Length: 303
Image 1 (cartoon, rainbow, N blue to C red):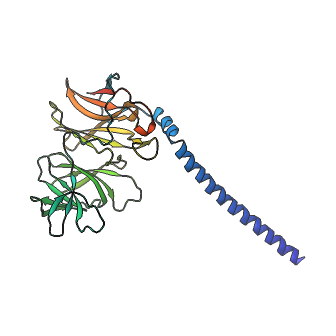
Image 2: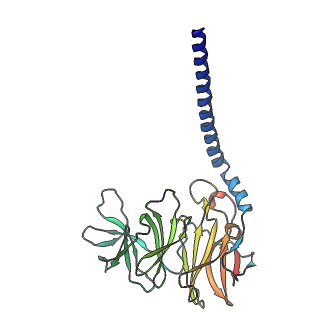
Image 3: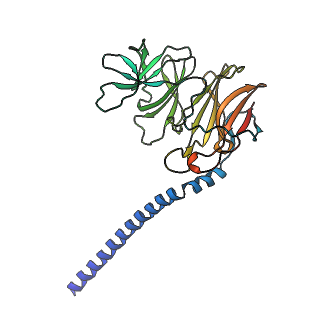
């Protein structure tokens, strides 16, 4: 009887182990199916998400956004957009002796370090961004240290641009962040005080924030991009979910988000000022990898 009892216990244990490993195998298989299914049907899934998304979201009381044209000629294909009216910082090479040169590292053995150099400071001196430390750019040499990013410190900086006098935009990955999202900060000078604008900025190497100084508008307009609609893998396969319109004026010296346009309304690529209103030119064409023809541009009025 004892042997039978031990055999029953052993059989029960094997059954439990079988169920356990069966569940683990089922979860693994389900995960693999979900991953491959999302890859295979990525375009279809994103298309459904896009259809359910809003066109316009207002972010400031009293703002009105109306469409004034949806029959413009399709905009030319633009895989690597610019930064608007104001150039962003560019990568240069810093030698151990403090010399700064144009170019990028081409091999791992190059002792020079990549730094961001902002030559157009919109009224501020030109800067060199070396890791989290900020220096004065002194005729292609590293000048005195002016400040540092500490709240937070960054693991990586992907983009720096001057917005207005004493205001910078910095896209970076916080050193202690546990997610892989890209954060966008507004940095005030001269104390380098940091204020997070969004924790979900679009890939700056594909579409950096754009800074506009429209003729007749008493201020600066920034268009920054958030979220990600992916239609395929590789190449020109994604677009930002939203184009956020942020203004810097006498009434909003620290900046103010006024509205954001969903990709359904088009990715905002240009801003002008006409008849006391901001005019937004938006491109709703899908990326090249979506295998769809380019469609008519749309024009929106913000007042």
